[in-house]
Amino acid sequence: MKGFSRNSAGPMANARLQVSQMTASVQLVQALGGGWNAAQLAAQ
Figure (cartoon, helix red, strand yellow):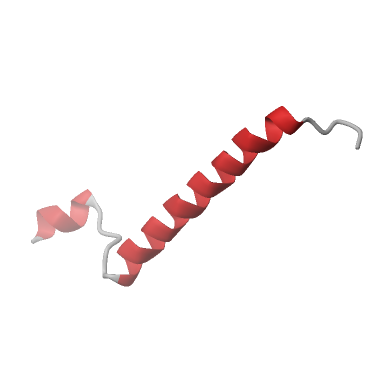
């Protein structure tokens, strides 16, 4: 395979895993009613 390097596969897989974990965390916070911002806190 042209342009393929075994050394670059590890970091890319790591980056994809981190993105997946962050996305799941954000979705969990939103599902639990999160998603507030500073303006909403001041209004309470």
